[in-house]
Image (tube, rainbow, N blue to C red):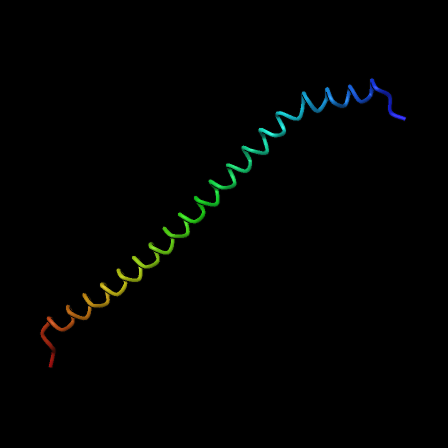
Length: 75
């Protein structure tokens, strides 16, 4: 059987250790939410950069096409 002094030791241990554990859990939860938010922002930035690169590639193709039309044709 568990004596009263053992229960008091257990309660004392939980009182001393429980609060830091609760705070650590709360902070981990908050960090996880922020990391997920940052991950979403990074994904949006990546997709915008990909779109920008595609637009720049198309603009370069059109510029080369226009430059080719402006140059006099050789016979």
